[in-house]
Image (cartoon, rainbow, N blue to C red):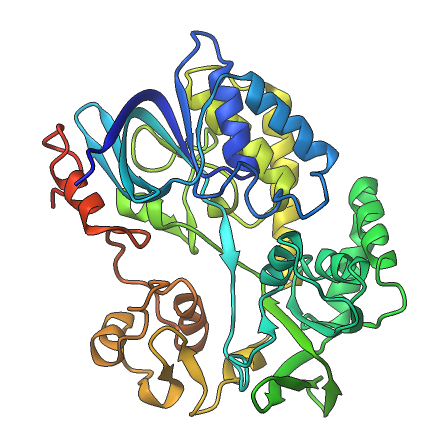
Length: 435
């Protein structure tokens, strides 16, 4: 069994997206020069949002923060999946796995910046080949997949529909329809409010121009995907009627779900599905800070500002007043987003009795009982027990059944048994593996 690698630092940042990068940079350049380690499962920092595509370079904002990260002296550990984290006498101990080898990091303070993932809601045909998530389609594009000439329907909710449509159109896909489930009045009211933020308004206009000749419809949602061995068409509804649209690819996504598992494992309070933080980005667990999407789905700008504040406080530095004011403004914008793109009740009844609701364990809706808890569903049907550990079906079943996850346990990601054994036998007796 390969011996684990073991490190120490003053501040450990979990997550290499915008919030994690900002936190690591600000902590590393704080007075006193604290030792900062950035741990991320991606191949390079940037997260999904700043992931560069084949033949393409990151945008100006991403490049600027990458340069700051490189210059700050942060110990960046890419390709590391955090599988366990515990509080101990000296602070915190994190167990990660890198290329099958256990990596143990001891840190005095911890910043959680684990981002978010897509929310999928089951509907008939959602498991057909060529039905994919909106973010998944963008990840495929960045990895070099070709959508040239493909007829694409994009459906769901939230501002991510626009960049997905623009990027697919730029890749020579034929955008047939972009369907936003939110009502027209709410969407247009939100769009009208963007005059207060000319930069956001200009960005939205630029994205819409990227698929100018494709219809963008509000108050429309997917009812079913149809086909034999592969997707052939989708059925959409507006509450009064349905219509069938022929297509080759369906990209569906219903907003984002925060990744709160690391925070929950440490015992941080969760409010409204998000990690509870104060004005210093401190959680309810001493020495633990949180920034970005786990505290509220607010986009890159909010993630950066919260990351900067969390990094400064974790390093014991003062927070400039303009950063605090900027965060307040961005939180108001987040509230407007939440109000505009709240999911309509019709989406909770799309799945039929024979619709698969847990893809890993092939559990169908008819096998579940609404009177159960999430734990009972696991025990009776294995829903949520598969490889994704409920990351897909958990959010879906919360929408369909009102269930919430009852527990979070290590390993947070699939890991080798040898890695978990190293965590249990680490030199710190009050660290990993103790109940």
